[in-house]
Amino acid sequence: MEGNTYLLALAIILLSTKIFGLATELVNMPQIVGALLAGLFLGPAGFGIVDNTDLLDQLASVGVIFLMFHAGLETDIKELKKMGFASFVVAVLGVVLPLIGGTIVYTIFFDVENHIEMLKAIFTGVVLTATSVSITVEALREMGKLNSPVGSVILGAALIDDILGIIILTIVSGVATPNAEISSVFIKIGLYVVFLFMISVVAKRFFEWMNHKRAYSKRTAVFLISFCLLMAYVTETYFGVADITGAYFAGMMVCHIEKTRNTMCEKVDIASYLFFSPVFFASIGLQTDLSNFSGYLALFCIALMIVAVLSKMLGCGLGAKLMGFSGKEALCVGIGMVSRGEVALIVARKGQEANILNPYIFPAIVLMVIVTTLLTPILLRIAFGKETKENRPALN
Image 1 (spheres, rainbow, N blue to C red):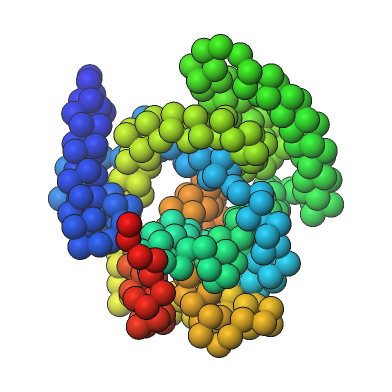
Image 2 (cartoon, rainbow, N blue to C red):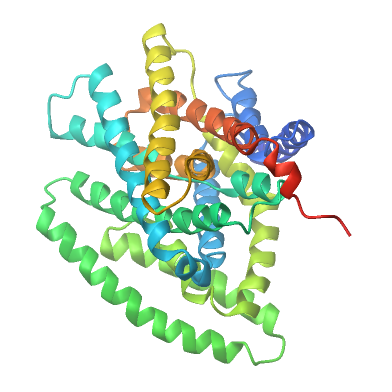
């Protein structure tokens, strides 16, 4: 990008993601879908108005880190404890089935002749393990079901799901490193766990101390964002773990300090959702080239979407059924975990960077994310049926 034309590109991205986001919101769909569509419109899949550049890639990387930091800040430890075991069972089955299903779909459509290709097949399954319940939360809130047992187990399972997904991402990324040995990968992960424990003790005391100081919000915002970026850097540079993992755990370390969490969620929202996140979601579309989207890839895309939906519904629904939920409640839990949203896109992007995601299938993943995001609120309303209207809290 010559001269200062990057300024024009950023202006176009921010305006288009907002316009497309508002348009999708008008039809009761999340703005993330609009941002993705904006990227497709601007990129090679559309009119080629904006080129993807190193600068946009770097800004998108910061956007991913902020998104994961925000997710860590919003982790509700009490919610995890409340429906702990049930959520754990739902999360585990909701990870295992998509992981197996995605791997099988890849092996059916593509030749898996060596170690690297097998890792790509497994990583396709890893992408399907992701869950984004932001859409589900809004749908459940509208139906008055957010604080029901179904809502609680979905929230708890989604949190555990994210942690399990990050662990799997770390292992697969580590194994994919040239000349890497499985034993050394697990040793690094073990050392990283020790590092996290030590840092969490220091961070907890420091930010609790900051909690009582004047000019708290201004100073703490700077310290916390710096802490997030440092954790992301150290995590990837010295432990070989994805930087988004460090950002996620940085948020989790301070999520129990209520004032810190509330302040930082607000601060991160301003920086992230006004600038970095739109660039990230648009960059996904800018990287999506549909010129090679053949009939064969279309079949793969359809198969991937079917497995993406059914594996979560069956896995998470079975987990809920085993934990004593009724058939209808188990179905609602399974549907509530279907949406992949930004989490799958973040994982897919990390796979691209590590060369363990087949670039040929990237458009199929983007379409899978859009379809699962659109389907989830619709299927939830159908699953709850008339009961949602009868049980909706009265408005004061």
